[in-house]
Length: 111
Image (cartoon, rainbow, N blue to C red):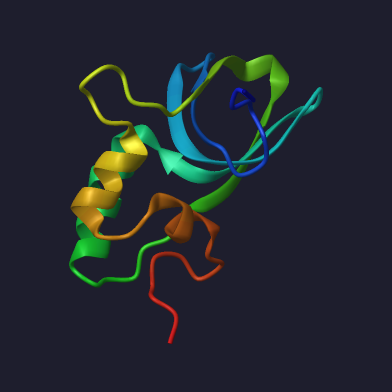
């Protein structure tokens, strides 16, 4: 059985230091230089969910963080009975987080 790892396209929670910040998003690249993420600050996730549910334009940013700021990277996964952040997002927004974060035009539905 293959275990999930920090592969391109994984949904992750990134914790940074100096200053301490948390970001949620789609992992685009991970190497010795740093982490490239398509996402947003964790505290903005609820606002993004509401915008998408309301049919408004919403977008994630492509971000790069140098490795010297990275404190921790964790895969977004359910914890016992608690759903993952991605599962909660999909239930509330009506769209998978991968679709929203991977679209160049943000959370708008393609025509």
